[in-house]
Image 1 (spheres, one colour):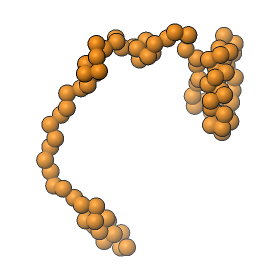
Image 2 (cartoon, one colour):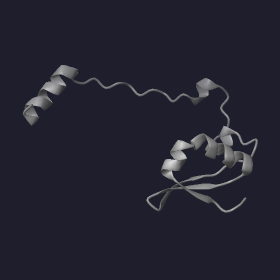
Image 3 (spheres, rainbow, N blue to C red):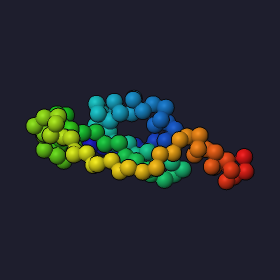
Length: 94
């Protein structure tokens, strides 16, 4: 792998797909800069890398195994949008 190439954030935003394709096909790293400060790095994965390897988790048996149990919903005062904005308007004098 060669040394990383520096690109500005505007250039990356404009041609993001091309940069990601280059990173994967040509095994290039990119460092994204904002005002001469590094903010992110684009590093290609090895071919054949699975999502489970990237996330560091074991493959789940099924979709239901991935769901978390839901917390009970707490009851509270319901506020309508009109009441909410009316209070803010009074507070700020609109």
